[in-house]
Image 1: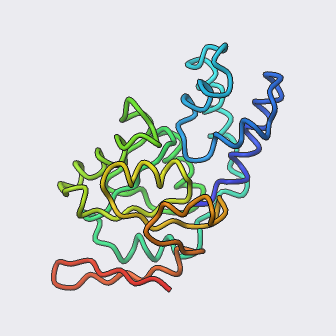
Image 2: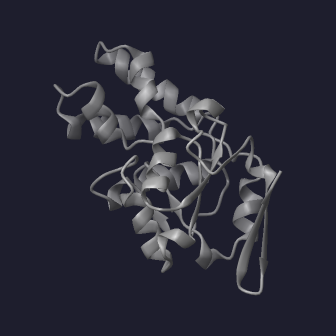
Image 3: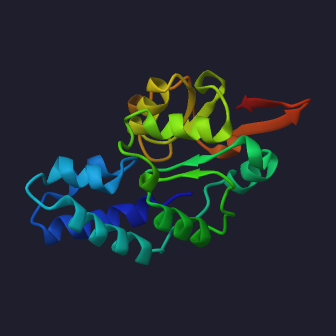
Length: 198
């Protein structure tokens, strides 16, 4: 889903409340757990307390949280037991945003609550592979942030980057880059997922 505007609104407000440079904070916010963003941009603050504040603000801000083009089709076309959502959001925030975007909750969901280290650590994607019962090398990740691309590559997975949140030059570590989920065509044939991009 696209929550870019909501993410930036929340982090801008939080940064101003804490007398921090909002642009600097936002640079770290996308694709990372909020706890780790706070630890990076404001190590002097009590990250756990600040994280609760940020999460409450993010759950409350649903304006502009929408499904990206192609998301509902992709979720419909993939067998439910063959994909997972791996997100830097907490479970409560992920489920709220899925509702706001009118997307169904997947059978398999790895959130910030499930890992000890968030992206760019490979841990979230390795847990996603384990949840699917798949070897990391047999997984394909679709990501929209440099931290997520780095996490997937470090996990030994192939990755297609979406240039919806960051410019293409910041996503070059991906195996391929598309400008929309709608550019990804999925077919499930004979137990094999075939992916074609345009």
